[in-house]
Length: 228
Image 1: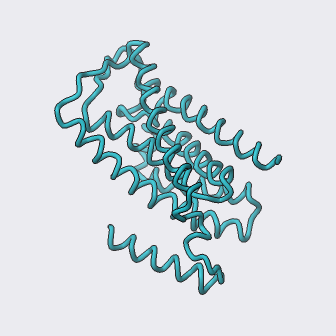
Image 2 (image 1 turned 180 degrees about the vertical axis):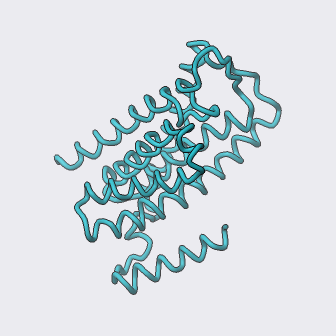
């Protein structure tokens, strides 16, 4: 996979420069090691990570989950999760919010491009047998919210991908630490539709609620920037 993605980066850079004549290469898609991008990446990581933990803390207050003491390997899991989450955030955001969104904007309005990009993102992440699609359907609206949130985050930061990568990575990081670290136990005192089908917070009401809050914040930031 790493080799394939390296090939994609090489091809994308050539596509940007030779097909669309963008001299900046990958920077055209929002990727760049600038000060603003670095700060937005760090902020996004913190926001995404803390949001996941806040979700499970609220569920613990309601008695739907209980926290367990971390094991001695928690430090390794945290670092491992950070590296994995950055890789996922970088790969998916450059592909969807970088390249695909840019291509759609060449033929459609910004709003239509964002929605088209979001539906493609959600659909590709929801490919499974029909019975599983029906059983885990609450996950699809959550994927829509994620796609919109990451797109709005890019728009609100002048087309830079730092915040989008950070938010995406932070959400993955927080969930990775909790799941791989085995830090929670579900009490099964409430329907999985509330906490998440198959213990996946994206497929539950609480996950949708917290993602809606994140999405509202991202949308508000984009709107305030456009009004300036």
